[in-house]
Image (cartoon, helix red, strand yellow):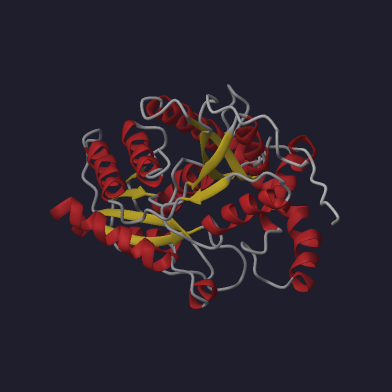
Length: 354
């Protein structure tokens, strides 16, 4: 009878290997807040580099590349960086040599990190930009290098759109595609109807009213625009903007009767979501409105669209057509109410991980 030879345990793969260290500290959990992005400077080439990355995103511009790329590279990226650079310079943080969006997002990260220290010493907060620096990929790598095996991805957009939230998620999962040891990822859903968010917006209006000596006839909620065809294809953004506005009006009580919803920042010849902010402001001023407040609920931090487009361009339209008092209420930024909102969402979305 032939005997069967068996290997010693030491010869079998995995048998006899040292047991894992059961006393090792538990893995960490990353929270990555992400905003839109910003050029690194106001010079022509810095702005051009940023615009090229932004306007080359097929989520942002859905026109086929065969049509869009000659327009983008032949006309827009030749002319627009100079105009955009001038606008950025008008709001630039000269002390830190950066855009307000970068300054505010960094401050949000710092304050949120301090707030969450009491939740768990396992949680690490960081920040990134969808376009420009710091990149999403670099921050995911940084968090995993620090021992995070789970990451909560937090796009700072209250209302969902494929052009904003979805493209942040796309970029994050593209980074994972190139990683052998991937962390688990959760993505924060839109929070357009979150009671904490609505209350924070309402308080920002009430606080601003207490600081001025005139009474607005109109409070305009101006959201970033979107091509109408995107909504027709199924983007829920418009409905969520309307829902935010309706909830805000209800929260404000009688003051809510003054609130209207408009859309700004349209680009190109296609029809965008109406009513347009600039046309609405002009029409209201021409028909007798003399005092107006403007709020930008869709922006989590002040940026070129709120500081320059609304603060300068919209103000000029209003005053040129007979308006007198015009204020843009600051975004939630890194205020106490803003950090409380971010903390509330993070705590909810980390359920089961902490």
